[in-house]
Length: 172
Ligand SMILES: Nc1nc2c([nH]c(=O)n2[C@H]2C[C@H](O)[C@@H](COP(=O)(O)OP(=O)(O)OP(=O)(O)O)O2)c(=O)[nH]1
Image 1: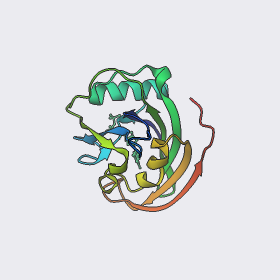
Image 2 (image 1 turned 90 degrees about the vertical axis):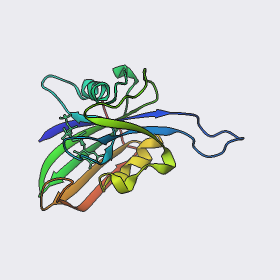
Image 3 (image 1 turned 135 degrees about the vertical axis):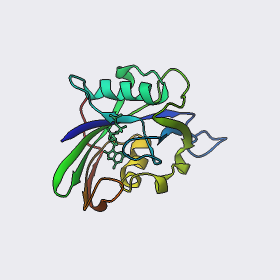
């Protein structure tokens, strides 16, 4: 089983009387290589040996888009289990943060892009993301299980089933 992370940096204001609606934006990356090339996701990737999930999320965000994050500023937002053909393929820790330093830059791995929360390009993301990411971006916590079958993730596998629990306690 792989252990991985995702990190969703957020910027911008909350609703005000003058400007109704949530005007916040989320930083996504268009992946330039690896799993999901050409698709959008949050910065993230696999844990390295000896690394905690929080350290991994900080490192991946720095490597992929150049933002600096203090690990204590990451808010754990979810735990997602991805099953492929009946076996656990990846366990993914999801974080969000409104605190970071620097401006996102494009790297060999990724092209960063800010999206208004209402314009997140779910049609160019993993099929399950539309089920859990909107809640995560609004400050909720989630535990989810997603089942794929019949091939390699993203390219060939079909999304067959899911189970979601909201507003759960998620640790670290
Ligand atoms: N949004 C989203 N992300 C997913 C899903 N399934 C899944 O593994 N991921 C994430 C977890 C990881 O952050 C990433 C896959 O990890 P990876 O390690 O293959 O990606 P990578 O090429 O960036 O990895 P790395 O070499 O930088 O560690 O995709 C999904 O259904 N939705």
